[in-house]
Image (cartoon, rainbow, N blue to C red; front, top):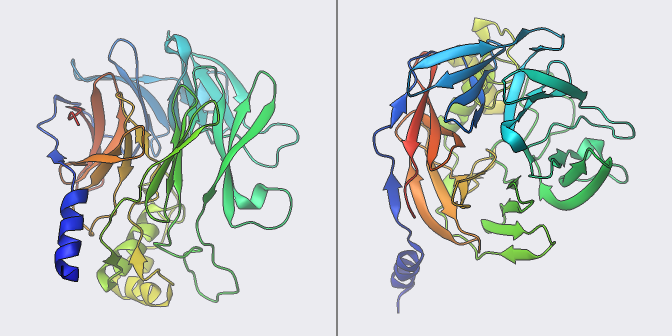
Length: 373
């Protein structure tokens, strides 16, 4: 058997169904500056945070209504730089209030019942959870710079119990490759497109690790038992000159040193002179890049209503987003292709929410049916 035929057969054996989202079930007629967090309530309404507007909303996609909750500030019913929204028991919600350095608990009446500081005694980093389980335990990532002991190039995934102040290590993940050494000109402080692991956790305390090495999914159960899936085939994507320019431009306009960030980073002004074609090309030429893209992006994966893990796959610049779906055994079962300009924002009961971003950077919210595997 020839090598080409063997590779073709391997590809066929590893092929998974590719599904495309149908038309949205509902579209909210409201313009957002930058949607950062989303959480569906028991009655079908959704809470939404707008990072740039520094506003929390409750929206009803069925009726097409949007109403603000609270206001910007540091008081009991206020927040600054609202970020993620995480489901708590009893239809309550945890709001990550990054501007005030605290975690706000929103009750079923949609009022902020109380807030707790993100900084805890004895910890050298802020507790900004990625997920919360049904017992109210917070799942956080401890960056390398905040760890005790010898320098490390990996982050720690940990679980913090507010009731006992106990912090348990659940695993390690490969983080960004940071660049060191002096630089006379502005540059992005990490190696772009360097492979890194991603992770998330569900309400039952099960943690999903997606390993860049081999594109492997590991599930770690609440009992500590680990289920490791097979290697997931992926096609190498060389980093092109177009990739370099597009990444640098998006960073300048949309990162913490720019304006509107796709990752929800803080807005800050940047001179228009720094985003000209000449400046972008010059910065892209001196910025280190990996030679090929990793098989998936650094976006946090999500767990759907059926327990499947959704991982955002690396695609060509300007191409529609594709999400690989993995089962409880870590096996890729299908891929979901989103309409152009859409990204996954969260899940409800049997539905998913996508953010549609137009050419002017305006976000709108859409609800879709979740395709069956």
